[in-house]
Length: 104
Image (cartoon, rainbow, N blue to C red; front, side):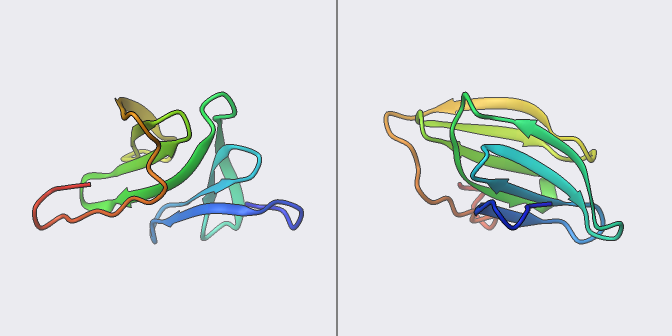
């Protein structure tokens, strides 16, 4: 749940379970859509998250970091679990999924 004083950097949504948002405070916030409250949060200030995209069929959340990293989270449960980190020589400003050919 993002407060009025915070700017929203990225937003992803799972209808039945939770909202995943990324605010200026560099936290991934997990909120309940039905209960309208914050469930959990992951502090990412040392990673400087920039954007994220969700792959719902595989329960994956991809988060781009300013250091040139993409963190891959398992979101099959409400609280995300970091599975893997991919390193790039630059940081991706935008991410798109193409599930027809399984590419990010």
